[in-house]
Every structure is written in C-alpha cells, then in structure tokens.
Image 1 (cartoon, chains in turn orange, blue):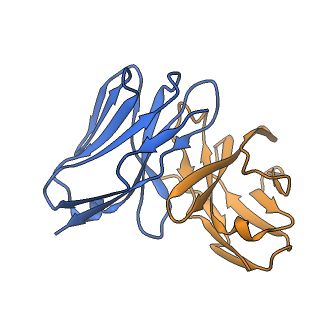
Image 2 (cartoon, rainbow over the protein chains, first blue to last red):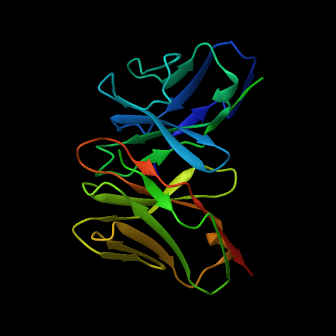
Length: 115
Length: 112
C-alpha cells in the first residue's frame, strides 16, 4: 500500500540544539500532519498542513516548532531550540483529502531523544 | 474541542475468542470514526472506519458499531488470532476541521 517514509528513525540531540525531522509523504497526497506520541500510547495532534500553509495547530505546537514543505521535497518539522519535554516519537501522516473523509497514512515515526 | 476516550487500556483474550474495544466521544458533530492498529515498534495503520450515516460496518473479522445517541462506538474482533495483538486506537473527526482526535489506545493481547 501507500507508504510514508520518515528520516531519521532515531535522533539523539542535546537540549537547546535544533532538530529537523523529515517526512516523505505519499506521492499524490495533499494534506500532511505531525503527531506526537508519548509513553507509547497517547497520540497528540500537533499540526496539519495544506497548500503550503499550516491549517491548524494544537497547543503542543509551540513557537519553537515550524513546518514546511518546499516544492517536491520533504515535509519537515523543525524544533529550535529543543527542550527535554520534546522527547517523544513523532509521526508524520498524509492523506489525499480532508482527514474527516480520507484515510491517514502514517510513517514509522522518528524517535527523538533530547538529553 | 473533541475528546475521545477509550475505556480499556489493556485487554487480554484467548485465541479464538472475541475482543471488544469501546470508545466514547464528546462532539455531536463528529461524523467519521476510523480505527488504527499499532504493532510493537511500528507505525499506525488503518484497519476499518465507520461514518455517521450507518450504525454497523463489517470487514471480515472486524465489526464496528456506532451509537450516535450515546456518542459511543466499538470495535469487535471475532475469532482473534495472535497476530491481532497490538495497540488499537479509535479516533473521531468531523467535517468542519481537518483533525483526527485519537483515544489513548487499548493494548490487546491475544494469548495462544
């Protein structure tokens, strides 16, 4: 089936550094999402993105977070600077249409460890 | 905003038995309810969904029921197999936004 690729699978960085998480969404999808998973269970919505713009973001999407997808390249989540509480698994997802009507396809996640 | 709750954090069944995972939601405008499965160390993948214009949907061994009055929906897995063991997430969404709200997940263990 359709695949979303996330690079890297694991990232370890020191607190205060910048990190960029990369996502290669399904090729014909138009909507992109980032979710944060804590403690192996809670899936928390961070942000969704369409047509080059953030559509919605949650309270977890702090000022230190930013997303972009320059044409034809990765959909990225950048955290600058990182904090200890940013340690989690970050999942990227994409869909061909609105999440209320279309299946979200998830990547395998990037485990971020902030030391 | 929408809040989705999964009542069972863990569920253990014997192979061949049925498993039922229950969820409730708060927003009466929610109209789309997908279920996702996450195996150990892997990503979420879609398993089945139901929309608010029906109250039951079946796909092979999976049945989803929706009770709009009670704002409750459930996933029934019949004739469980060890490979059904995973975390199952229920979710809800409605047309006025582009968010999927997830429950906290239910760890299903199917014992041989």
